[in-house]
Length: 81
Image 1 (cartoon, rainbow, N blue to C red):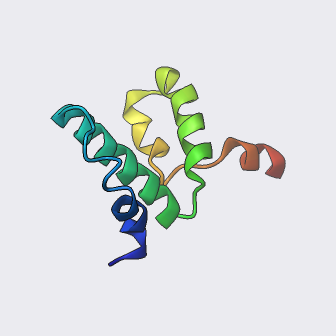
Image 2: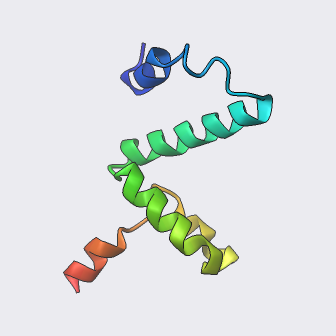
Image 3: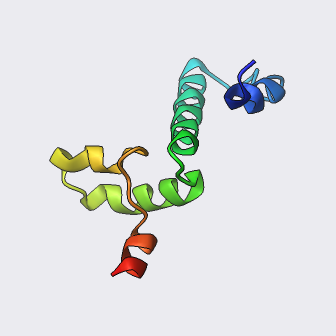
């Protein structure tokens, strides 16, 4: 088994009753985004916190800049400047 899926396998019983199919889909989306962050060297909590704060005012044509593999941590950008 891949180590990326180890957390999902360990919590299988906890997630067996997510409440609905929609809840299961939401969980799958969350785990996919969190794992995409990890695979791209991005801390998932920092990414999700920043994206949630910025997404309402972010131009729709540049939404791809918020994806984990293109995202730049604003704290690191500010420190470099």
